[in-house]
Length: 172
Image 1 (tube, rainbow, N blue to C red):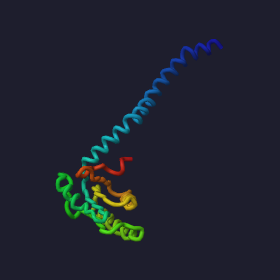
Image 2: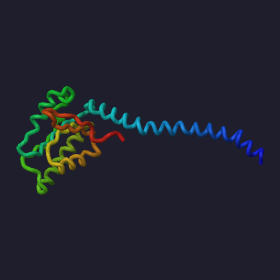
Image 3: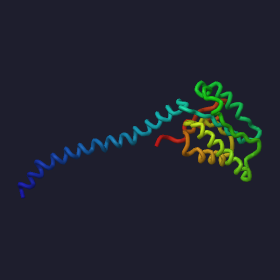
Image 4: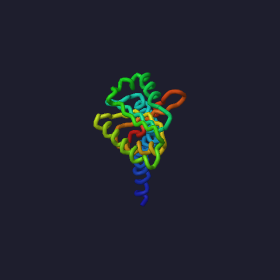
């Protein structure tokens, strides 16, 4: 029995300590990546994605507010933005309505949205730069329609100009 206890104390205990240290290194490394690495990588990806226009970008202007024409403001912003003004006119799409969106007019809006989505898809666009003004229900439909399609950047009007809030969907 003494030989067994001495064998455990002299041989197995040091081996257990070494194995414990070896196992602790990948556990600590994984913890570090989850806590500090992943959020930093996502922030860097988001910043880089905001700066890249895309290989075949498109512009989508959705103006659903009656009496307010954002098309002119958006076109002015696009003309001043170096990367966006390079997008050809055949990849500029818009949905403009002069009357309020109601539950009765929603099917017409959805039909028009699906037609625009099909045209964007047929054009082979990989990134959509979206300028949106309208009710939240229509924004949810817009997001649902483009959820599995091209990467979509949302531009928000703020302080007299548009800010690119980046892509709606982060890398998986």
